[in-house]
Every structure is written in structure tokens, then in C-alpha cells.
Image (cartoon, rainbow, N blue to C red; front, top):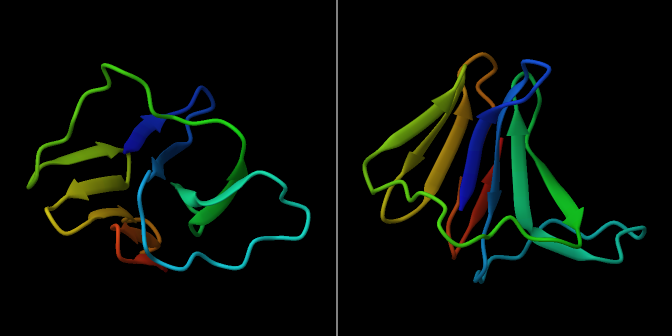
Length: 106
């Protein structure tokens, strides 16, 4: 699940969260005592980051992005495919690719 939006300060971004996965996330920081490895975000002009969090973005009734479709906020574009979700910042080339089997950050 990815939320693609523009914030009140004009920053564009996407925040993705996955419930079930088999990939090995980046090492959990010592100061993170909450959930880790299942929420990743990318903001315009910045590299993607994995978040330490104690809540969830999953909520009933959120719209679904069909396979083959894209959603964008400024230069941030997320594209849904059967194999994965890819979100890219066209202004920097940074990206995140998320599937049950793998997490790629660049």
C-alpha cells in the first residue's frame, strides 16, 4: 500500500507499507524499539528511507491502484505491477521497489 501525496509545505512524496514480506530489511537501528522494515518512503529530492514506527497506514476503504496504473505527486511517480510497486523521483533518479520478495532502494 502506498500513499502518494503533496504535503502542506509543497513537498511531494510517497510512503509505502507492506503487511507480508520475506525480504531481509536493512539493519534495524539500535534506537528503534517499534516496527521496522515494512514502511518505506521517498520524498522529492531525497533518497528513500525505511521507517521505525508504531502505527499503520492501512485503513479500510482506501483506493486501490490497479496493476499497470500510476499515481503521481510532482516528480514522484508510483507504478503498480503484479510483481512489485515502484516509486521514482524523476528529479533525482532515486527510487524504491517493493514486493513481498524484495526491497530495493536507490
